[in-house]
Each structure stands twice: as structure tokens, then as C-alpha cells.
Amino acid sequence: MLDVEIKKAHLRKMAEYRRQLTEKPELRNLFLELTMRCNERCLHCGSSCGDVTSEEISVSQYKKLLDEVKADMGTQRKMLCITGGEPLLRKEFFEIMGYANELGFSWGMTSNGTLIDRECARRLKQAGMRTISVSIDGLEETHDAFRQTPGGFKKAMAGINNLLEEGGFKHVQVTTVVTHQNIGELDALFEIFDKMDIDSWRVIGMEPMGRALRHPELLLTDEDQKYLIEYIRNKRVEGEPVCYGCSHYLGLEYEHEVRDWYFLCTAGLQTASITANGDIIACLDIERRPEFVQGNILKDRFSDVWFNKFEVFRREHWNESGKCKDCEHKDFCRADSYHSLDHNTGDPMVCFKNVLF
Image (tube, rainbow, N blue to C red; front, side):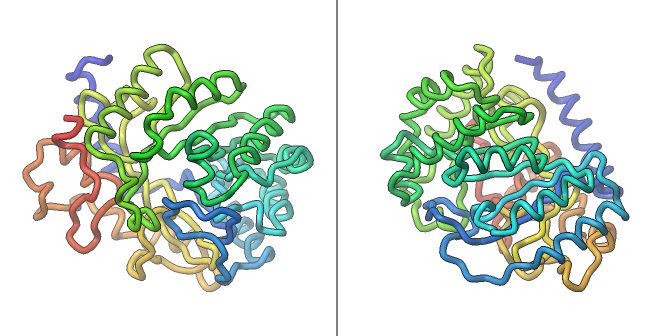
């Protein structure tokens, strides 16, 4: 464990880095929500994906976007993060991602894994996919119930194994969303994944957004949160490739202990997203409110929007009058992750003060 004073020095540098990004943002992660359609009905889905018939932008519009981003901003130090819904349900998936690969973009994706047979794994490598994170949200019965998909666990595990057998990917990760229901299955899940040749296991808490708001009984209690963070730290001390997600400031005891660096919400600073209908927003997990839509690629050039808008995400001070006002951690936390803010009050819906620190 790093000395607390060293952590404070690092966090002060991180705060200064964030201030610099508000003045000179640098796009590092561009999320493409290829579809809102999904073959699962996850109880926690922030976007409420499923049998959705929302408009999707065309292949030619994606190609135009990628051409413009490369011409205006280059491809270096940028990652295309492909998501949905289930992105593999987009019938032109390989045409779009093959084109991105030809242009020189690095890309990876999140998937439920159920559609990744051996041929799909081969085509993913051929299209240049570097990284993938596949969701496993509990042991078989728990996973299938949580995702409301009978047989989903077996299909997802087969998908992971098909990726590992194909080989040649930079990073194959499993992500587990931890709930009050499945937190007791972490050890059993670890035993399963430890026998597989995955590169990492990302363990994150269920977030209060989307469908999760209809299932408060699944949200983690304060005791659950403490147990989860301790569990991850202990695994990392043992040298295991287990990590927490990017969300949430964890306090001086746990920052840099459960992930490789310190908390920083990069929405609108290093991260932007294109929704399935072409809207330009910051992070796909942020509540879809009109004031957060910065433009649309059907009428706006992405680079113009990136460099000239996103002001709401680039403020130096966020919550000077709410409950964060007098908090001694506010310069490190900045009201926590933007996606878990109550945008009516400006207060965080997830705060680990008096829970972890």
C-alpha cells in the first residue's frame, strides 16, 4: 500500500491534470453505440436495451464519421470502444469495424458473448479487434436470471473460450456486475476464471441508473461495497489480475489499490460517444437528457463539436453549493462520476464517504 502522503501528492497532480484537460481536452476514447438492440434483458441495463426499434445511422454515415475523425484528429492515442445493446446484432458490424481497422483505428468492444462462435471469433481477429470484455454476472442460475436469458451463461462462457482458442487478441477480459444477490458468488467465480486464460477480471458494482432503478433490492449495501473493495484489493495483493472499474472516488486508503491508477471521470475531457441515432454525447452511461446532447453526426462535424462544445463537462467547479461544498476530498473527487450524479440537485448518487473513508 502506498503512503498516504504520496497518494495525496499524486491526487493533487491528477487534479491539476484534470484542470488542464478542461482547457485543452484530448480525445482518447470514442464510444460507438452500434445498436440499442440486444438479445438479453439485463436487470441493470443503463440504456434499457432489448427489443428496441430506434433509428440507427447507416454504414456510410459511420464511414464518413471515421474519415472525418482521422482527417481532423488522427488515429494515434485513440481507441474506438464498440458497444450497444449487443454490438454483434448490427448486421453490418464487420463492414463497419473492418473499415475502421483499414483506417488505422485501434478498437475493442463490450459484448454479452452469446453470439461469439468460432467463426465470429475468427472474423473479430481478422477485423483487427484488440480487446474485448465479456459479461458474466454470477454463477449459471444467477447470471441467467439477472440477464433474463435462459442458457445465457453457457453461451457466454463458450464465447469466451472461442476467443481464447482463436488467440491473437491483446486483452480478453471478463466483467462482472456485482449485486446484493450475487456478491456471495465471487469466490466461486474466481475459481472458474482462474482456470481460464483470460487477461483480467473486472469487478464493478451495480449502478443506480436505467433498469437498476427498478430493482433497489439488488443495489449494494454499504457493507457490500466495503466487502467488494476489500475483496479486490486482497486479490491484487496476491498478484491476481482483478480490478475495479473506472467509476467512483474511493478515498485515500483504497485509491491506487484496486485499479492501476487514480479516479478521474473523463466524460467530455477524454471520452465522447456516438449514440445509435448519431447523437454526440460524453459517456454513454450518463442519463440521456437533452442538455447533454452536444450535436449529431448527421448534421455536425464531430471535431467541431468536440473542440467547441461539451462546456457542461469542462467546468472547473461542479458542486460548490451542494453537499460536496465543504468536503475535504472535493478536489480529488469532483462530485464523483458524472453518470452517477443527480443532475437535478448536482449531488452524487454514489458517494463512498463514511462508507470506505
